[in-house]
Image 1: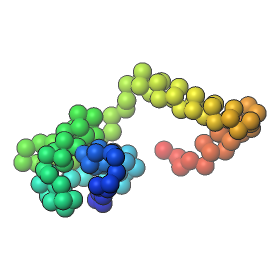
Image 2 (image 1 turned 45 degrees about the vertical axis):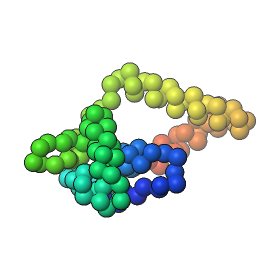
Image 3 (image 1 turned 30 degrees about the vertical axis):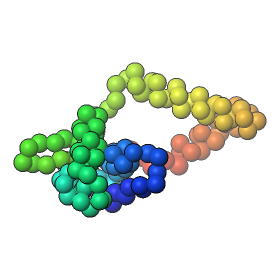
Length: 126
């Protein structure tokens, strides 16, 4: 697991850690069941206070990304599909962002749909 924290970033260190672990878990770079370093170990590796790493781990656990158990450590949790309302909100937001980009670029609806279809076809099968 390769986590890096940029001390010059305006993003707090705990959020940098949280976001990187989420990315690694969702990309399957950290498969379900992968054991994460202890809070103390990761804090020492990154030169941070244990409380900073602890906050990142707590937020990951609250979001269902990891499972923490006493004497077993913290592991990547099985993916839980988000609630339907959240899925709908996210897709509406993505569609609006795409529609704004299409309009800003002056593309036709047909060109926008063709570009979407091409990108969707190039995605790996799930």
